[in-house]
Length: 193
Image (cartoon, rainbow, N blue to C red; front, side, top):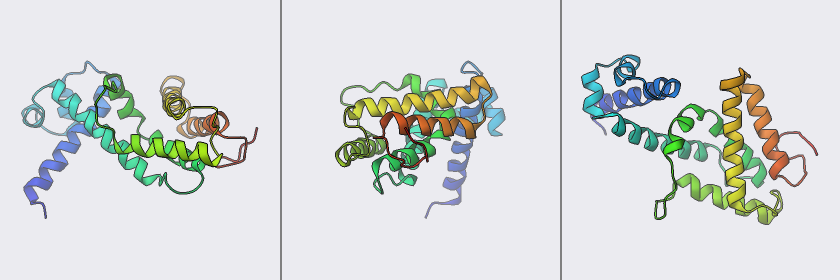
């Protein structure tokens, strides 16, 4: 069982990371002192956890991957028809727009880089969907994966840049994915061709 000190350190670290998502998501050039203020800690405390901006950004990248993996787990992508599972995953990922858009420019999938749990689960889901016929087999799994992420990005920027409601943007995202990748059935969204 973790000690009280380690629980406090963990809470402080998460507070700093969450504050960094808010502050740097609005202005990537914001000073780290602003992150510390929003986190409710002293600048020296922030520096004990993250020596500099690059250390904080590296931690944010890891934090984003953990949050994405948690969202994938909550979506139960191994259950039910693949299109429904993909739409559940998109719903879960939609709420992570701020952190994903903050760290995504630094995510280059380099050769030899370890795959995340989400990478493995998504690839399996897309292969299963193509095999069972709920996802259009004319598209490769790689195409479907890129389309999912770019549709989520469109939904996130639609909220940010066009003052659209999250509800409407998520609905448009899910309908777009269903129509683009589905095989024409009424799976998951109530939409039809």
